[in-house]
Length: 86
Figure 1 (cartoon, rainbow, N blue to C red):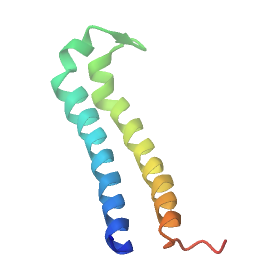
Figure 2 (spheres, rainbow, N blue to C red):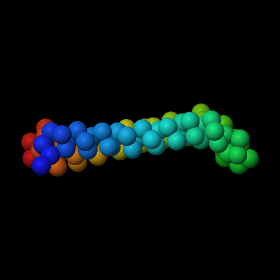
Figure 3 (cartoon, one colour):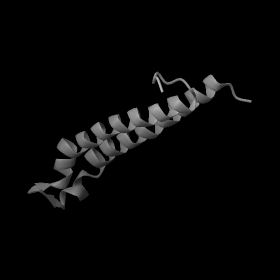
């Protein structure tokens, strides 16, 4: 049987790995590798590849912060390590 602390950190590291993968795909994949194909699409008068590298990825990063916070609260509650008074 797995110790609770090990299971907690395994869940934490799995979440971080998934979110870092999304971060990598958004920043490196869309911002660098796919910029030329994306530039063929206009978005608010700008080339989508340029807009994504300059603005779009920032929105995704901010969303990832809130997703991490919400999912870590859930993991903390599941493993009874939360600091809520409820």
